[in-house]
Image (cartoon, rainbow, N blue to C red; front, top):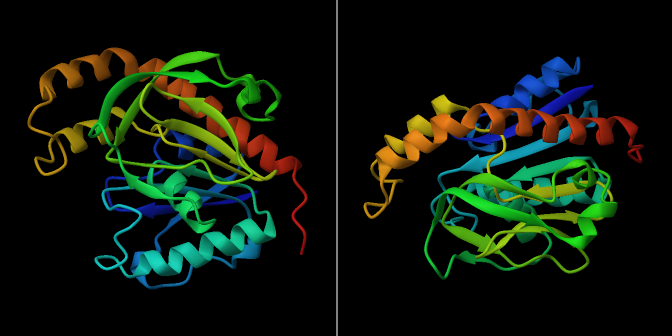
Length: 236
């Protein structure tokens, strides 16, 4: 199966999701609408789409005009029921594409390791039913979203929604299940992105302790999504 990862910057890549695709025998290709070039192959040739994170926000069309194109791109994928998994900015863009509000977190950014609990609806979800009922997730976001009308809320942290399913082919997660240790270190080194009132060294140390287990979680989550995508029949 061909898998397309829509990326939003050089340090927001596929990470362990790429490893999961390769281990399952799939071909993962990365592409960005910001490049102004067509995807590597026709969209109909992809059996699954990953929409990953980025340092920009979903409401910054004025700074990043290509976000308008991405909104239309996601709308088309949803209409065609192409299996799709959005991560952080990606989940916010999916919510935005169907008219849900995307806005700054009232309590400020959620950065670091946060407890996440699944909802009752997750027990019958084809992807989330295989996950533990609670886990510590790596988060890095300044915005959140309202759960779209008709979507199933699948997970929450203390301050916001962390996952939903929209229809039978689209999922979104607010936490970063794809990150590698190298990626986290690059974010920690970005002084513009890391709030001054957070302890950079403490987060780096905690991440080094947790990252191996978290990467196994990420590979399992993405692997499960790709299994669901393989079983899907996308209408022409």
